[in-house]
Image (cartoon, rainbow over the protein chains, first blue to last red):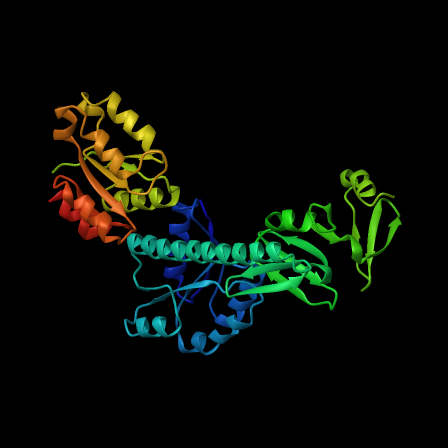
Length: 251
Length: 128
């Protein structure tokens, strides 16, 4: 079952307590990883925790800063607006919130809202997978110099495999670091990319790193092996992968 | 109708969980039997078809499931004893809005249909 990571942005203690109580009773579907009372602090929490869902009190101040979410480098979380003012339901539509809940919270309404959020996320993931599958099968067919399609919820980027220096596992995300120092965050974990990468001169040197062999400038030995890359980056090769790594490079 | 036991048959664990939570939030005294496999659920019903004390009063049944889908489940159920048919009522729950499936569900007048997730109103209407 998918666990929804959520953050609360609300200055009302009752709301925070009710949501926390709800989360305690439903630990298999929701985990509240933080709360704060304004959107500016909220953005920092969002950057830290990369949540799937935000419970937001749509105050004028909070809505004034709402556009900050567009600058996030990863999936924009879903929103559920919570307010005691019914008119705010209009704002919820304007801001594309998944649902609007009126205080005081009712657990069955809340669970149905979370149901909507989960179904929406599932739909987006399956749509993305379908697109990525189409693109990757097209790429394989035409054998077009090794491209890879990287998806986040709002876009799919096509990048040349040869331009990737390495990929880093960031929990359920993967960070692609390119030659031009650009970093692209994908909403899939590193494992999802392993088959396409491994058949293209990439090697998993570490639990968290898959590197492009062609981008390695030198391999140094000091308390283990390190791969050095053009832009001064040095990454460790895990002890238990060293032997396989040396074989792979035919050293 | 006094409801003591409800069986939920849904291969999607999350949907199963949500349905169960909604029911217990409305009436915590109801005993809920969750089955993620339609096959296991039908085997359970077959085994206890003549033991009403073990049987649910209601079954909330999903349509799209592997091995035996909702309709296969109903067909199998219809071959069971009169005891279970008198005791247990089936409701088909689905996220689908496919007309064909709704009609197919309505063809058999003893089967009722609702969309997921279930609502307070739907649940109240069953009890009354």
